[in-house]
Length: 387
Image 1: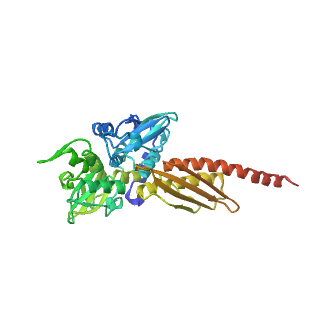
Image 2: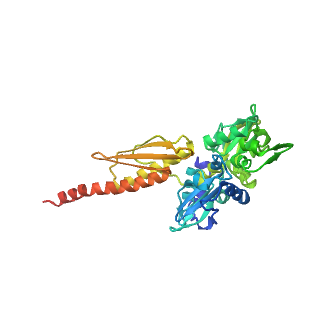
């Protein structure tokens, strides 16, 4: 972002702050809880994610993942739980903001090294950002252009399919070329567990469960909107003051873009340097956000390995996946090849959680590379000691 349009110093001050004062109690449930109970907790607490801690590790289910369930009333949370990275309490705001942006989180779990002690919420961090984005930086520079939309006559079932397939949480609704409303993942899941009444129309359980009614019957008719010349600071203030999770950018009632909490979090996120060597990755997940998180993970791995072996000239990774029968989950196999001018190091690992698979590969490669490097270094030392 242009330095002239933003107070870099004031924002850097937030990035460098320790997380301690932002830690709040963890919103958690045990792994054998049903999704219906989890949904009730989400509604009561007004949260988007619920965490399932296990020692110093932590699983998570967000509202969008509930849309994948075939039976919310009986399905256990363990079937949809994904392990996510945790940060220590000594970390800084810039690190947790990067984690949230990469993994599309609205809250992140925090550990003391032994157990999960709480969470940091995106809203609390964005409140700190309020008033610090100076100048005339337009919201259009931050917003996603031409977002995915759905006509108002489409069924809620179709809207759910789009949110699940594209792994998004906000779906603007259009009437021909004009913005008509907004559908979100929390709105849809509210129709999956109990009968609802929309205006004069009663939706019975069997009809409701199939979501066989038009989105115009349930959409938010007055979503937060701003014009294309709105500043980023004003758009942030609009979202925070209305406790929203997105703002739609319009011009003459036509949708021009969408800006979400995640977009604002990128302002606070630490910028990670690109690896100094070529990095290639094949077989990335179809979901663009999961794909970006995977690429970021692999680049971090390469930087770590580069410290162990400075003469790395190239890093490659190939990802393969296959679905589990009767489940939305996929099992991953990732292989990594690290090449130097004289040697090539390879390792592969399998698992259900792609970031965890890469963590295992990193540990194994570090040991393998250190073991292979020792004789060469010893030979070089011995050669320099010879008269």
